[in-house]
Image 1 (cartoon, rainbow, N blue to C red):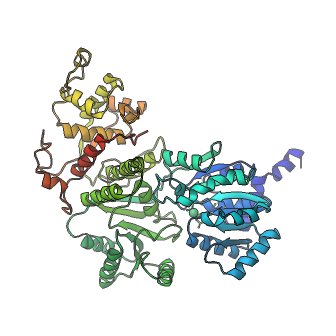
Image 2: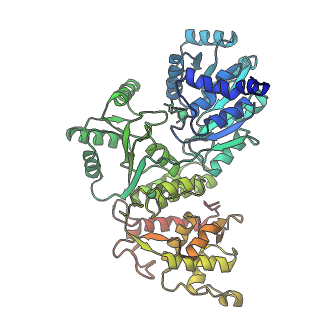
Image 3: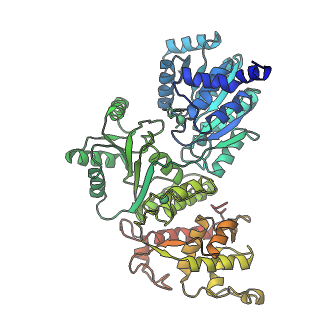
Length: 568
Ligand code: ADP
Ligand code: MG
Ligand code: ZN
């Protein structure tokens, strides 16, 4: 061997691959695993955003085994720690956990092993780790890596905010020189910024995997009539398969599971109100069954890894796009085709907004959460490829339509609004990013109050009189969601400008069509705003109500308050 060969043979990543094969039994690294591991092995910090099932655990487990010292893993849930530690021990890895469920004898033994340098991986909760005596004791232990799993819990923009995670920023100064790795499956650009800031990962390399899940066949439908009946139909059409059904309340999981069992489907209910032992039993039963249906609240989730889940049905919609992707992502982990079917309604959205309004948090947080709800429903009720919409939301660029969701396969009736979109885009262009959404709409309608000679002289002035103001607002909203328009925050008075130049050009050239969901019969007439009785616009429980009514109500409220736009 030449010296170069010798050096290559000793590269840390080769030692890592060796462990991947021998200890974990996998032949190759997946996706960005190797890059993340290399970064840590070089002693640097990193932030890795990999989809659910993407193999984030190995990104910290392997460096902990390659580098000398103890690897500390912070995890938000005891259940997650228990599963991972059990799996590691089974693979022959010296791993343990210290959490409130560990009895004193085991605790003492774990400390003995830590201090004797016998342990490679220690799982801890954030609040457990940050206790002063614990930090003191660990300060004397050489560490290989500090890993923060489910790192989105640090961000209050996220859906699993855990205030204890905020304390973890101190690890930077408490353990200087120890590489830190934050991993999560769900982080839009804003949450990522928050993670970096809160966890003091400013200079860390960022690894963001594609969020593509080509095995998922997605669809969404408005709730119509009896939801339970619809769910039974959906399940009956998918016999002998494992699935997860998410429902919005504990009661609903029980009643749905009972209805399914009556229909001969082996269904189990799962929610946080059940006894711990019952939950563990049901989980085990589900994991081991060839075909079982788990009807659950979101208490069922994080860390559940059943490869052959063939469908996830949302009997009630998820809380955000992040939650959607995580929950739907529990299907098809074996890479075989699997379905994600979401039922949603205007009442669900209204309920979500109400919940946010009632929360005891800062106004800014409320607005961000409200925006996330709106984005979720824009996706669910939209006319664009669902997978592509989600991936764009996560900041992926150059995303193509999936070709297999209900939108791509044309089950949703749409109207071509390309010409109107061209008008709106021209107007935004001519107005040169000087104005907000409302003013752009007024411009299109030729209704701007105190219009200047300059504006009235523009070729786009008043070219939009064929549509109503609400229709223009819907279209503007959609163009923002598609990235064809964008909003510049401008201190809470967002200004509308053109978005992605390439995409805008494609619309102008007629190479890209802009489609909108066809409004239900009689739902919207030109100039119809304000004509409908108020009672109708706010009625809850009418499944067939067009969602844009509720969207509009939210938007009207939101427009009154200062806000930063969702589209950055
Ligand atoms: P995440 O935390 O990103 O959701 P996990 O770390 O729990 O994902 O891993 C999900 C599954 O993928 C596990 O069953 C794990 O064994 C498997 N896995 C991880 N890395 C690889 C790999 N390189 N090759 C094959 N399987 C892998
Ligand atoms: Mg994980
Ligand atoms: Zn699609």
